[in-house]
Image 1 (cartoon, rainbow, N blue to C red):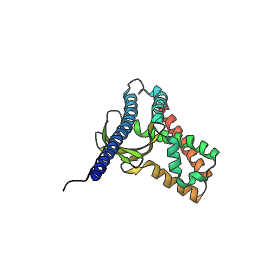
Image 2 (cartoon, rainbow, N blue to C red; image 1 turned 45 degrees about the vertical axis):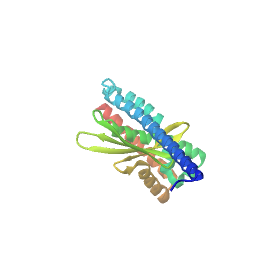
Image 3 (cartoon, rainbow, N blue to C red; image 1 turned 180 degrees about the vertical axis):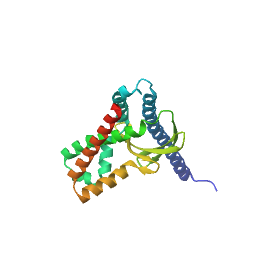
Image 4 (cartoon, rainbow, N blue to C red; image 1 turned 90 degrees about the vertical axis):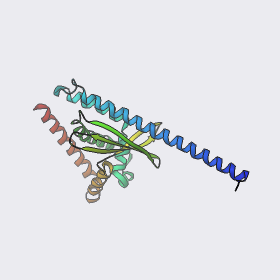
Length: 213
């Protein structure tokens, strides 16, 4: 049965729209994946740098790595999502002071995890749209085991930024949100801030002890 001219036109319009959507889809996913790859590859280069790996350059290496990471990680969005429903209860001043505290804690924890990676290979697997976001599926191919890591990214100001990291199927943001909700709900926001400050001081003391040994 032949198609009527009207139905044929509608069919062609749908095909063109689908083709355009797939082109945009592929472009957005590729852009997010490439921007993330540039950041991760840059970090790995610094981790492999023989001069920066010397104990006396540890602070400088960490500073330089976090400069690179901060370009691609949206710490404000991470802090907001980790606070969940409690974020809107905070004053503007509290939000502004909480974000850098959260960033420092996350940075210290992140550095502790990645500094052991020197010869591992990063495999970039699938990348796909999830609503307005792009999730980039990667694997750290280590000597003993493979570690799956998914970077969840959102688009802002023409760039793609990481707002969550899922390591071995455990979301960093969800983990923090559960912990923060328990402390705020059971005690107070002020108690949460104190706990984070204490934890940060503890990490800094451990880092100084390691540097001195």
